[in-house]
Image (cartoon, rainbow, N blue to C red; front, side):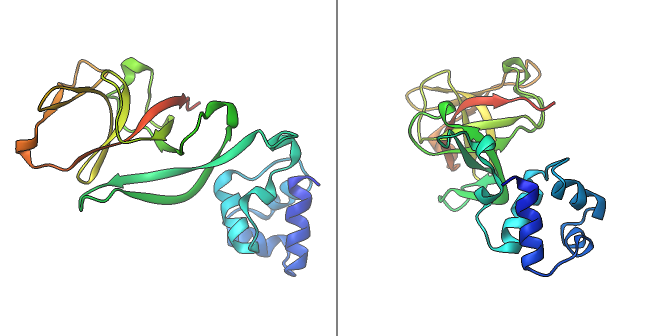
Length: 200
């Protein structure tokens, strides 16, 4: 059964018209009609709302062609802001997920962040690119990591000395950021950059 057929079946089970569903999703009725005719597919943000509305898992809307015959893809969360202002790392749940090939993953826990700004353009990371991050509390010198400084998450190259952490941008416009224990700032490495999904 294709995605559109599943949407149509659920809509009818809940005694909703295409116009009713369109209103709840904040889309035109023609969009729902196109989905149910399998001429188009809803984006992940709409699939997330559909799953919540009809009380089904998000994966329900992915057909075999999406996931591969042996389930070779997984859904990973795209997090918003990350903070550790209280010493505990807090990830902002956006409710949005990205389908990710399993061969991109190699053990551990993964998530996505959305790139902000131009500080890493030398590493070919542009504004709004999706960044696949592996959760881990340390990285090797020179690796690119997601680092949280109190209420802000940054993506930088990390260099460690005996008593300092140096965060290096990949844009000559930005000077290195140097932190040492005397500054009493909460600094936490939360993950290592594994892959950049370009934004087209």
